[in-house]
Length: 506
Image (cartoon, rainbow, N blue to C red; front, side, top):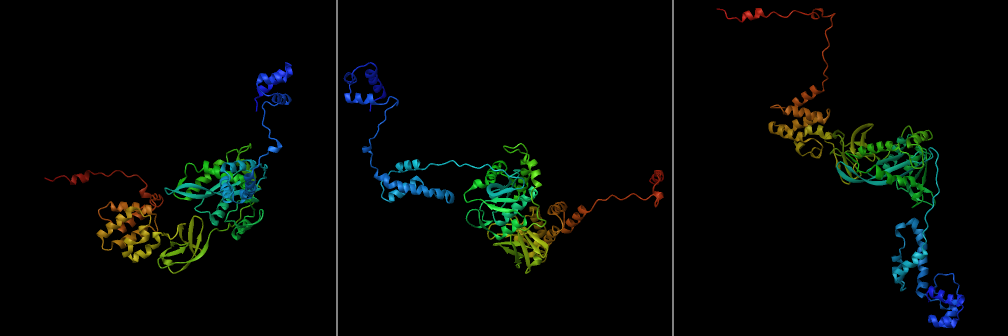
């Protein structure tokens, strides 16, 4: 291959200056055949490229063996991209498989073939527009929060109305069906109505089986839920998050804006109250491409939302439980205490994502925070006070007292009662009985006041509680018509006569 500059100089010698091809060959030290060929070339290309003759096409036996396999795997990747996107064929995995087929090919060559054959296309989307009350979207996300001083990962349900953009976010201890349904109920109440269509991912609390297209076999409980709230449920295609892109973006937006810094609270209900406040604050925002605030659009959309049911359905398990001799009932491997007087009776237990409530008929007899751990005991020491009055010997070792939330002041008082009374544990049970009718903080204040005296008793604590709780009503003035003598002013007493009695008689 000769440089372009040499070709141009030879052409200038012969075609412009009129010198012979023989002189040009002698001057540039090339053969006359080369000069003749260079004179016949088109002058347009700036660089001469090697052109293989048809007879010199190379044979590629390894490529011919490997290429059909690579093309088949790339075709399979198109299907896997939807159904198993994290299990697609990679160039390295193709090379390993080709080696197993005794095709001696380099990994870099496989990567080169894949790069040439695979032509990724950027997705295109159709702009959407929604009328008021037409559509909402829901999805679960996950975040870290600080509950009771401990870091825990919890799921949160995010929802958004598409016309107004009003959002709703609520944290739950679980993604079970009762949390999924209760979160939507709270969202509808927060928005003030129910949209006509709600779009979901293929969540297990709603879907039993994915059928063809958008068809699904739904859970009976979920079917009942959206029939009560009167909306249509639509499920996005598998691995097609763009079909509910608004709520997909909301999950990240809420995590970045309202879950940073990490929310803190004594329980999830406290954190959720803050998130509701954040949702109201967010309604003052103007979303991109709009000229009105979310709040103003929501005010319009509320007139198109469906009504809330007058009797919302209950969520969570409803079971009959038997109270054991220890005053406990078992629910999902965990034991919850009830007042001891219900021992050996059958009660009704209702559970929601946050609480476990136990009823005797229509009367609520016990309420506990729901535990999702296994083989836990959740007790309330108040449930055992009537029994401790009769079995005071068990007071120092009672499980409910040892794991209860009584202030340390009570244990100090118990030790003092045991040291000064023969029946100190029974007196301590009487002290606990006061907590059944008074706040623990009020009993503790009266206890501290009584202990400040040289000697004290439970009766003294009771009297102090009664005095503190009695209303301080000033005495009414005397009626002038009934007691006229007490209404006038009297002259001050003359003490001179009394002073004379004190004089010493001589």
